[in-house]
Amino acid sequence: MLKTDTLFTIKEASEWATQYLSKTVTTANISYLIQYGRIKKNGDNGMAQVSKQELIKYYETYNGKREVAWKEQLGKDLNWALSFDQYKEAETTKHVHRLHPYKGKFIPQLAEYFLDGHTDKFKKQGYFKKGDIVLDPFAGSGTTMVQACELGMHAIGIDVSAFNALIANCKIWKYNLDAVQAEINRITKALREFLSNSHALEFEEKLLQALYEFNNKYFPVPEYKYKVKRNQINEEKYGPEKEKEFLPIFNKLVKAYNIKLNQDKADTFLDKWYSQHIRDEIHFVFNEIKKIKNADTKRIISIILSRTIRSCRATTHADLATLIEPITATYYCAKHGKVCKPLFSILKWWETYTKDTVKRLSQFDKLRTQTFQFCLTGDSRTMDILGELKKKNAAFADLVRTQKIKGIFSSPPYVGLIDYHEQHAYAYDLFGFKRKDDLEIGPLYKGQSREAKQNYIQGITDVLINCKKYLADDYDIFLVANDKYNMYPTIAEKTGMKIVNQYKRPVLNRTEKDKGAYSEIIFHLKGK
Image 1: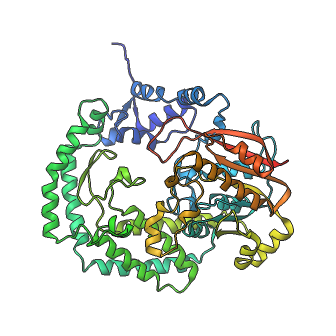
Image 2: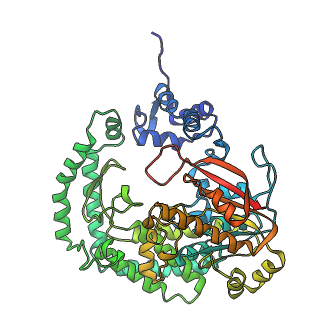
Image 3: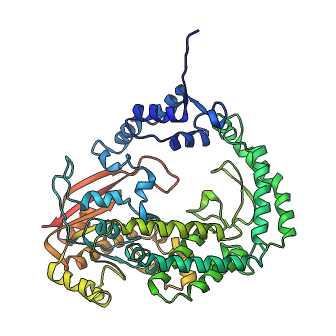
């Protein structure tokens, strides 16, 4: 009998796929395909095998075809080398880059590509060197600053959002990690004691057990997702049916443990998007953080709390980035293919993120250089950069005055895409920062009308004209933008600059649900 197929072990599959795709495919990558029903698992976990034919079928839908298809849609000038598709997510979110979620940030490899001294067939010369000063007038969460620090360059960030500036500065600050860990241990112990007087943990434990049994019965892994993928189960009908079936079990536990699902009012973000138990824990930890005497330690632990509470919002797993309606009961989760639950305690995420943060800060400590970085809070259109920097770091300000800033690497906001303050509304509520939504350039709430575009052009123009005063004569400016409205040639003209080059790159790993072909351009501007 002719053998028509080959079965691989997970390890063999990863080795074969690595050779087939000419890029590293790990055993975890193969396990992911099984877990999410892309391919079928044969045999038990100890001797799990996968079909070579199924792997080929899956990879043929992807291998090489995305590049060809995207170039057809977006143009032959698409520079696939700048997709950085050879990097795993762990590398694009390395060390402090994942200290806190942030919409709209670029990956560190992109900043590194233009800041470092290497050349290739696309980048014909290096533009920055060690000891140079780099400016990012739309600092966001500080990616440019962090990469400059790694590369031995000084960097100034500016952001209109006080919270963004806090994130950016927390990433590049040098900490006494033993002191940070000691405060984390103190607060975690206090939180556990606080929770011993609450029924929330015991309730969650019982609820998780009930969900485990229910999901194992009705949503077995990986069979359920495999059948959904092949239309053997109608997910849109089956999921909601089972959601309703589990609800009485949930309600019974809520009653038994006297769990308060909603707060008494819904006036603020913290009121609306958190259960009462979560809200109580947030304020308990926040009050413990206020007791920390060292300002640097207090700031980084505040960022951990912010990251924690972002993960504890009362929303579905699929809507974490968009927030449609608060969820207070169990629900069918299409993302995970089972019945999921909202959170009723911050403890799990608090413990996860405290460990993760200390680990990431320690990793970055091994890479950082003895250079200056600081993110200023304010409006890049009007800020006296030297004056404001002198208030924060006189030595750095002196260096800028004598040496000048060599150039800019930044990703300005896209017109009508993101409300930068609103994405962190929970943090503004908790920390009491003053919001400056009216100073955002091109926010979502102002839309993409003709007037909005004109205001955007003027806003970016004003930023560049203001920053130009502090730049060296032979400056280089790199701006990352999806310029579908062709505004940047006008911006260059209005600022007295010229676009000397454009690098068009595919954006492969977007946070939005739209996975379609998408590109952005890195504009290289110089003085006329």
